[in-house]
Image (cartoon, rainbow, N blue to C red; front, side, top):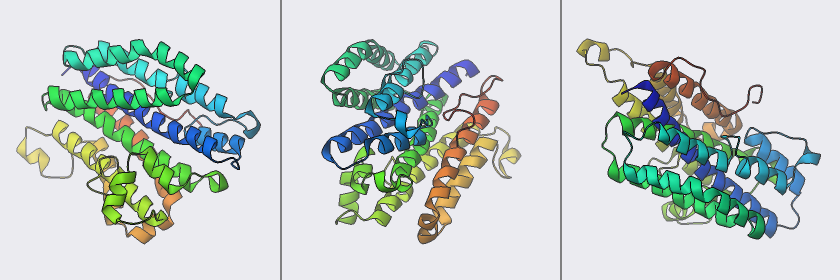
Length: 316
């Protein structure tokens, strides 16, 4: 496969997943501001912007700034509208390997964004968030049902998996690092679509340790960090499969596989109390893992160029 097409597929997966997860985070954030009259809005907004890689001073942070930066900014691939527009642009360069249904879904989504922005500004943003979640689910559903399980599908799912690790770590960070302005674990679970699966798994009230454990380590919930790392590792193993038998007998073939496997092994074999006791550092390490893995994928499979980054340079 041409490296240009492979890179487009990888970033389609990342951008669509980014839009989906950002919509989930913002939906919970705005709902929480409405339901809790005692919350410090400026502090909560500043914390969210910092965790999403767009820090501003507390006195400049409010809901309007959050939505402008993370939802409506057409020039930023870190916003919902920017990510979906970038996904559609990448799809234009990979139409020969995408099914017609996937292209049409991305194109319709892109063309509907101006109307969705207008409605969001007039009636509130929740309709936009619902639209983004539904369209993202449609794109990946069509990928599962209309794409052969060849390199095209592997690059798409690899991009989705790495972005999912990063975004799930950020969602957990909104609870762990935000102090008094932090959302409840129930809201964190809802923002990842994990609330009902969590209740069916533990059959009880939401407990902080169990909620963090579920989002990090559950093998069966597809949005958990462990499940996403495992999926990324499986994609890399297939993409790096060597035709030379002896070459596959020692270690792994690529740096990206090594980075992802090391992160997955850390989660799998570290004792849960130890993991939860070091949670802020581990979440930061997971975000760094995604950045390093993305750079390694770019160097290994795509044309030589600087990798696209999620966090602006100089921001931890």
